Amino acid sequence: MLWLSKHARLRNNLSPYIDGRLTASQATALKAHLAVCETCSRELDELRATATALNELPQAEAPRSFAITPEMLERKAAAGARPTPALGVGMRLAGAAVAVVLAVVLVGDLTVGGGGGASREAGSQPAEESRLAQIPGATDTSKSGESGAYAQPSGNADSSTSQSNARAAAPCAPAGVPAATGSAAGGAAGGAGGPASGGGTSGGNGSIETPAGTAPPEPAPTSTPSPQSPNIAATCGDASGSVVAPVAPTTASPSAADTRLGAAGNAATTPAASESNEDGGASTLRVAEIVLAATLLAIMSGIVLEAALRRRRIA
Amino acid sequence: MALGVGADFDEPDLIARSRQGELAAFNVLVERYQRPLYNLCLRMLVSSEAAEDATQEAFIAAYRAIDRFRGGAAAPGRPAGFRAWLFRIGVNACYDELRRRRARPAASLDQPRGESGRAWDIENPGPALEEIAETAELGRAIQEALRVLPTDQRLAIVLCDVQGLDYAEIAQVMGVSLGTVKSRINRARSRLRALLLSRGELLPSRFRQTSEDR
Image 1: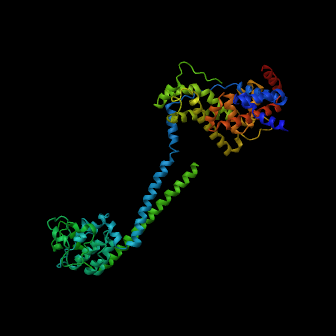
Image 2: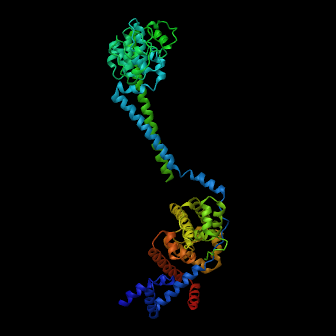
Image 3: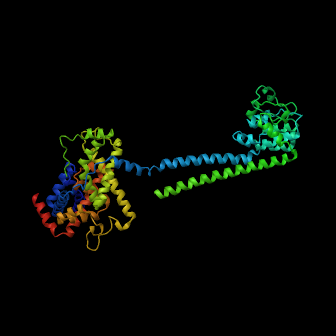
């Protein structure tokens, strides 16, 4: 019994013994056992023969040279481009993150900001403004808006309306809207968020603001909202400082270099309409925002989906 | 098999130059090691075509990763460092190939032998392996027996008895402890012995001969 367990243990030492991996004492013990154990002795021989046979296996010649050529490295590199999806995925994720942030901002704007929030972004859309710009603000809408204050009584209701329209279009859309509705005063109220609108409204008072950025000399007046229209929401953050030049009420003359003026003149026609227009403008903007947000979300989910698919394909 | 180091073969220097992007220097190393590495892959994959691919793949991977090789130049007393590192890359290439085969069961290396009892009836081995197999009946029997072993045991015994690496180097190549190497070799060799005994008329004489030698 004892001998058997010893035999089993020592048997496992046969292979290490062949390879010289036994300690001196282990080797001594094994040798002693081999002397008396025919089985182990024979097995040792057979294991040795096995190792020898393996060692004597003929080695195949290399079928060709495996020397590396620059072309191989290039080819590998090209193929390696595939494994780099890590970078691609990273870029995608970054893009998706940007899209998410934009979407969140937009959505936030829509749901929370109502008027005010939107105004902030307005600045980015000068183009539109200019278009609408009958109003002075054409150049820097936001600012002009504030400055817009210079309402001129003389103003024609028309002109004022036109302005308001313009504002609506302008980024400060929300602000603009209220202003329009409330006509002069109302505009002011809307003011907080959208100073621009405020300006427009003030115009409503009959004043025609000529935001003409061109006329730098009259900045002073601008800064101070037209006395007439206290409401001036000059607030428009930045705008206040703007250099709006209250141009002469004479907007009437389309010839005026300022296109806006001209525009104003044209627009001037229907004040009443203006209100409705503004509303329409505002809702259009919202719709645009919604569409933009939806588009971003779609892009983002597309990116994520594609990345996921690609990963699966690679795997 | 011996990897004699010629007088003109300065491995640390070649490695250092390879690190600096000298492809020609690395190709001297390739020339030196391509035969043993190819044979290792051949024993593991049985198919000469697959072995060729794995060998080339390993050399390219090694060249790209040569910066990460530590020990060659740094440990001149351990000339085996580079070989073990290179073999490890080659073994990984073989394991990748085996994994791919497992995904396509029809070509699995570890599947049971065919009706004829010959492993490579299914494998359609390349000329290189046939050359080996035809050299001796014993060689053929060994190749078939090797094929039955679990991959890890097969690798251990091939590295030890076919390639002639010592336990420490095998542990490096396989990324396992010395104790694991020892037990894998022990089990593999015992199993091979049993397999060879069970199948061969030619074996007894061979065995007798070798044991008489001792």
